[in-house]
Image 1 (cartoon, rainbow, N blue to C red):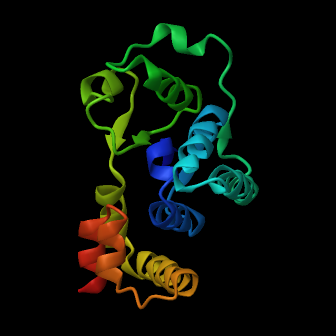
Image 2 (tube, rainbow, N blue to C red; image 1 turned 90 degrees about the vertical axis):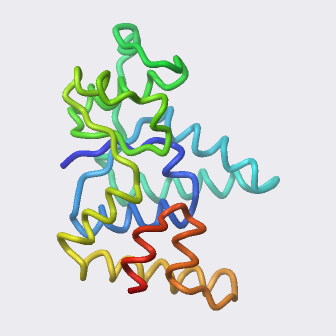
Image 3 (cartoon, rainbow, N blue to C red; image 1 turned 180 degrees about the vertical axis):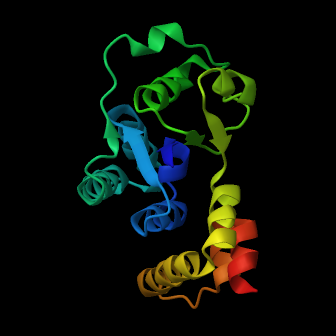
Length: 180
C-alpha cells in the first residue's frame, strides 16, 4: 500500500517516528512531495530558532531512509483538482501523481472522502491507520513503539509511559492498544 503523508503527520516527532518506523518495517510505502517537506520544515519554526534547521536535517534523514518517497509533482499538475482549502490541493496532486492508495492526514475536513474517492484515494488518520497495522501485525508495531518510547525517554530524560506518550502524540487508540 502506498500512502502519501501530509505535513501535519510528519511534523510532530513522535507521530512521525511511529508512522515512518512502521513503514520502515515494511507495513506500507510512505510518500511525500518536496512541498510537503517544506511545510514540515516551516512548521518546525514553532519550536524555536533552531527548529527549522533541525527539521531540515530530519527531512534529509527521512529522504535517505526512503529514497523513493519523494514524489516529483510536475508543474501545473494541481490545476485539475479541487479541495475545500486550495492550499491543500498540492497534497492531492502528489497523491494522484504517485498512484498512492491513500492520504494520511489529521485534516479530515479539507480532504472530503467523496472527492478523494473520485481519484481512487482514501483518507486515513494516523491513529486509525497504525491501529489497523497493529491489529494485523502486533509484534511489528510493538517493536516500533518500544523503540520510539526508548528514544523519547532518552531525549527527554523523563520516564514516559507508552499510553501517555502516544496520547500526547495524538495517537490515543494506538497508545491504549500498546499499553494494554
